[in-house]
Image (cartoon, rainbow over all chains, first blue to last red; front, side, top):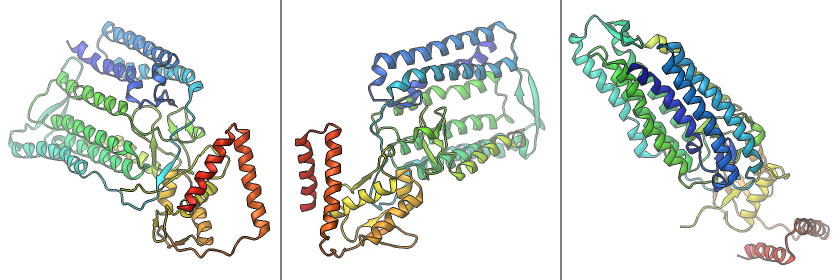
Length: 325
Length: 131
């Protein structure tokens, strides 16, 4: 049973990679701007089929390895990384197949010569408070039940389900997961604001904000659940399921957004894209530009502020061992 | 409700961005789509939306200000002003414009635009002036 559960992250990674073309707007395929109907052409179908076949075979091979070897945290961590590396090679091959069909017209930079102010979508601002309320609610339960919290309690289990790390009853031990969840939610809210004010105006902005708020809710749910560890024992399999269960919903949401008819992809200079993933253009004042792969925005590393944001992400990662028990 | 006028540039064009912006705005001004009193967006916003450097937009705005089309406000955008129509262009300037028009028409023909379409395009441009 446990073996099947630890296969889930790998299965999920494989599924996300296989669905990658559907998680990208129709006019972008393997980091190349294409016509809206290119995916239905023979060349488009061949490129997608090649990518999916390679990724599917690699996923099956790694899953077989997972089931064949004894339960190992190292294999569990390495397999998704190796799978991503294989997917990167498949992506490059598919990209080479699509490049000759690059669309040249459409998406030229244009703007309305008006001074109308830009307003954040009011409903999303209110909705983004929800995750913090969720985490605050979990904190309130802990405070209310403070006397029921034991002096030490398990916070981590190995793959066999045996507790291998304990926390003490103090601020960090009890509230660590909630504080970290709050930190991540605030970080995502900052990213959502940056996506709004640092990007060019267009329909993509509100879609990205909606997704960011949805991700905030998932984070708040997961860390809210982990935050209740001092009060109740949560089995490892339930923790993995709690992380993975909302993923299909998020994936469906992205697929829906990506398939909606919309403006052509943002036209950015080809020479500023490194491997179709990293954008560096010091002449472009935009802080974020539309991604060539996946749905949403990526940083313009030619803008100095983008390095501040990247440093913020590093700070969030560095804070993991400092905040979590 | 009338849509605000659009400014568009082509990043792959051989024409420098500063000229594309000043030419594009001049067309909107001449055709009256940007009337006196209209406020133009800030240099920062135009640069952001068009994906060009701030200095490029600032230079285009300066050029239009020097031609008397707009009044630039420090730290803000610019306002379209009523322009004093200059004295009729000299014969040598007209000859220069004629040469440029001939060059443009020649380029359109060499790129396969039928003569009838060229005439229609020129009529459409003139129609915009007479509005």
